[in-house]
Length: 277
Image (cartoon, rainbow, N blue to C red; front, side, top):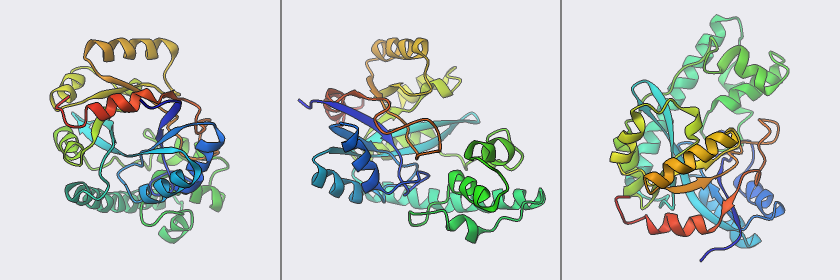
């Protein structure tokens, strides 16, 4: 049985995080964690580096991914734990998503140009420490570097946040496809930060597709929400997970190890790898 504490929701520069995987693992070590989950958005390229750093530093590392799916026009995030990052179907899906993200970035840039903000793709790429992934945090960093905004949050409020004029939604991915690919890659699907959604009838749809866990502990969940989601998880026999949702220093108040769960949760997740639930 695994012991210690785990932060199971961390992003790196291989998606929209600001720090290399090895640096994030070092942060976990400094925070006294025994386990860390690498869950980049729609990307698994940083897992190898994270695993190497984790072995060197004596920290356990869970290979994961965070997929964005669409249900009736609402964006849901699904975490996949214990995935095989070399799985062919997963790699194929992530390649398709990468292309869609490039199209999204082009559309955001076009909208910014229409607003008089003449940012270029080259300026955005200068903010990227990972290989190819372009996310909104990279655009925000470029806007700061240009002097169009003074702070990271200002970039989202004025330009690229969900209710801002240059926002472009992601191209939709069906829940059934996302959960099937995670399962096919040997992973365990968990709904991320449920407090961010209008659950309505969506929750039962995800349950029917094989959802195995619920991220009950998250920095944006109130005490009341956390208790409510724990009751919901118990009612439906779901593994209760948690993590900091760290993207980088200065991006938000989140820090690696800011939200943790008992490492025994990883045993519960591992037990669900070969079952429908």
